[in-house]
Length: 281
Image (cartoon, rainbow, N blue to C red; front, side):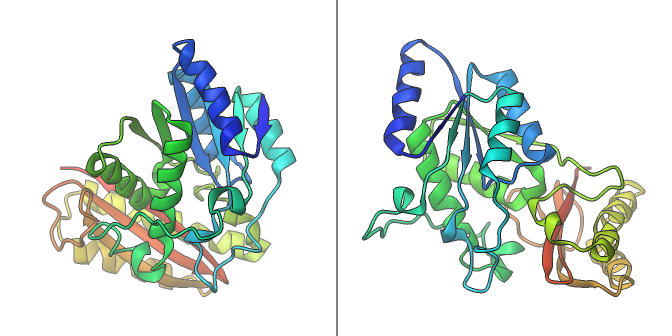
């Protein structure tokens, strides 16, 4: 496995693979990899001849008060993990390699980006869409793999690929959880022991909301109200949002009549965590 820093190096490797008729899977990440990322790499390895993992903490998707500087990084550990899982190439560029002086081209989307995380993190999805578009252009993968924990991001990227006629397949992979239910996240490392225990309120509320839907509740406002009540019972938790939206448009719904996404964002202390469940009739 190789670790490269430049666009040219990535393209040289990928072009040589393509000349051999090999398929390429891409797993875009911001690094500090955990078993959730590992499941994406494993899936990519199963479905492709070669796997590229990008590790890039993308400054464009962080707001001015967010955790860009403190976001955890450990390239040596990530490289070892990728090699163990059978990845072939890590693309770990500097910001200057991705955004040259004078950079002024962006990918913007409306509708899907105007709810959930798009409301509380207004620059976030502009940065996500731009960097993912660049990675697709650089690597030219046959398939790209994203986690369902970032369900809004996954829906946005699927829509972008359709709208811009991109020639690749987007594959979503299930949420990977700790034994006690907490969704795996690089930001879990920010939590103190007390906060880590408090963070379980996210998965508890997700399970409670999902059970209500499975038991026949179709009033989205009632499900949201019960989930909020449960989260608010935890003193260290502060709700950013708890919403039920249409799975395709990310717009809020009052009644469950088609496939939905129930998504939550909750601060545990200063750490913002997300979780979700999907439900279809």
